[in-house]
Length: 116
Length: 110
Image (cartoon, rainbow over all chains, first blue to last red; front, side):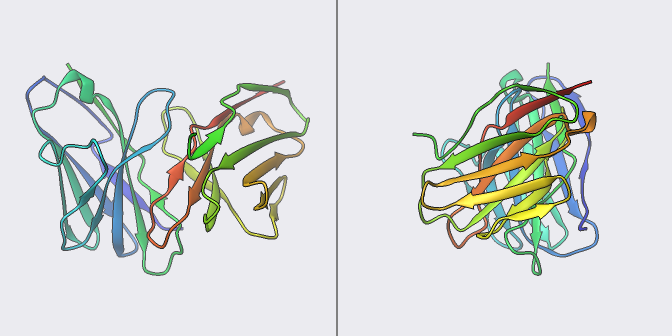
C-alpha cells in the first residue's frame, strides 16, 4: 500500500517557538493532503485540506495564521505551528490521497507535539 | 446531533467471542464508508471499506444499512490483538473530506 511518512515523530518545544512538521508521500503523488489533530480520547479533527500548488482550506475555528500549511510539491506538505502554546500540544496526523485512490486516505504515523 | 456517532465503549469481550458495533451517520447523502482501526498513540489504519452490499475480510464483516443510516462491524473469533479503537468514517460529498466518529474502544480479554 501507499506509504506516508511524517517527521518528526515527537517534538517538545518551549512556549512561543514555532514547530514545523513534514508529511511526505513516499511512493505516490499526493494530489491532496489533510492535516488532522487528535486530543487524548477524542476523534481526529480535520484542521485543513491542502492541494498541491494552492492555498490550504482551513476548517472553521482553525487559525490559518497560526497553522501555516505549505504544499509545494506532490509529495510534500508541511504544517508549521507558529508561536506554539501548551494548548497546542496534541497528536498531529497527516494523510494523503493519490490520483488512483478513491476516497481512501493513507495516514502518516503522526507527530506528538508537547509545548512546555 | 453528531454527524457520525459511535458508542465509545469500552467493550470488554473474552477471546474467541464475536463482537459487533454500529455507527450512525446523519447525512443520508453519504457516499463512502470506512472502518479504521487505531491503536493507542498510533495513526489510524484502514480496516475495511464498506460497500453497499456489505463486505467480508476474514473474521471481519462490515455492513451498510442506508435506510437506517448506520454501518456495522462484526468481528468473529476475536483475538487479543484485536484490542484497539475502531473508528467509523463517513464521506458524503464529492471532495475527499472524511467525517470521523469518536471511536469504539474494544478490549479483548484472555
